[in-house]
Amino acid sequence: MKWQLSLFLIFACFIPASGQNLSAAVSDISALYKKADAESYALMMRRYDEQIARLTEKAALANVFSIKAPVSGTAINNTLLPVNFIPGEIFGGPAGSFKEVQFGQQYISSFTFSPQLDILQPARIAEVPMSKTLHKLAKLQTAQAIVRLKNELAQGYFSILAYREQLQILSKSSQQADSLYQLISSRKEKGLASVQEVNDSRIYSIQQNQELEKLRNLITLQGEYLNALFSDSVQIGADASWYVELPTDMPPISTQLTSEIAELQFTYAVQNLRKVRLDQLPGLSLISNYAWQNNSNKRLFDPTQPWIQSQYVGLKLNWDLPLSANRITSLGLAKIGNNQAKLGLQQANDQSLLQKVKLEAESANASIQLRAADEIAGLEQESYRHVKNRFDVGLLDSEDLLRAHRKVIQSQLNAVSAKAAAAIALENIRNAR
Image: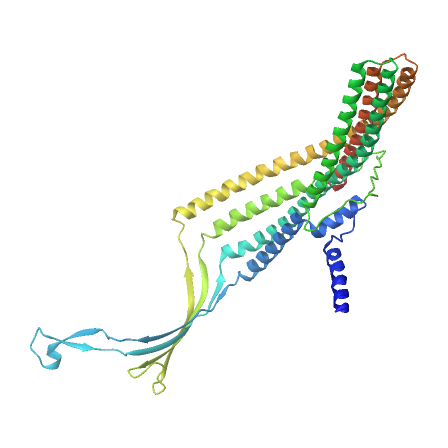
């Protein structure tokens, strides 16, 4: 029993450990992109769409010369043969009379094999380039999904880094706010501060603690949001890198992906219009039929009766005249779709140019904001030191001190937000296609 208890304790210790998430923490944005490439829900779905498009292309190629080979078999027992009325004169009866006679076989067994080869079906031939276009379109749409996902991941990644850095700032400021409250309370006991000043400092300390808790909740929420994008959990490591290096010159920006997708959509619309028109033309098929029949009045599949064989081979012209409302409507819809796709292409070209200008402006503005925020934070810190020195010698009251402290903390938070905005803007440019 002792060895059984030891074995149980070993398993009891091992099982909880094995249930823990062993996923390695992400230390930079590139590692997060790599993880998303393998585990993102959005990309998994897009790759399934690519597989469907690839199979559709293969099916269109195979369907150009479609082969059908239906096989059927029947085993019929005519339990009551039909009655035929034969003129009675044939049997020596009076004129105008009829004799009831039953003709036919009670048991009929048959097999039929009817292979057919579609030699010329114009609409099916037109579906081949359409399927190739859809396959290319699926690949570009996957690339577009990757761009959107990377931008989303960059937003979440740098937001978490910013929140963590701001959390350190607020943790320190919360301690400083408590110290200021203690300092002003001590001055009140000496008759150097009023009750209002003490209350104001206490309110300020409470507000700093509230901001600290709100930021902790934001970090948790942002982490859950990132996890929702993956089939497995993702953790941003404590040593995760900012690597924000503002380029001296604007990096090259490519925003042609939207135009490329719209161009393929227009190509598909043109091909679809051609396919609808060709669908109104006749088609030609090679047809054949091979049949075997066994007739008997004794039993099904009577071995004493021969199998009667028949067969034919020929050509079949099938033409559904374009007179139905559906065919006329299909042609009109295809024309409208072609015009819509043409307008969509023009709009996409304009949007691509606008997107490039937007990315350039956002990156330039983020760089300006970052430099300004860093400088302001330094100036506010210097101002606070002067205010604190003057407060210590009694030249300023606590209201001026708290105001200066609030401004320096806010400027530091703004500097971190500006750094995150600059990093996100730069990633959006790098991810653009």
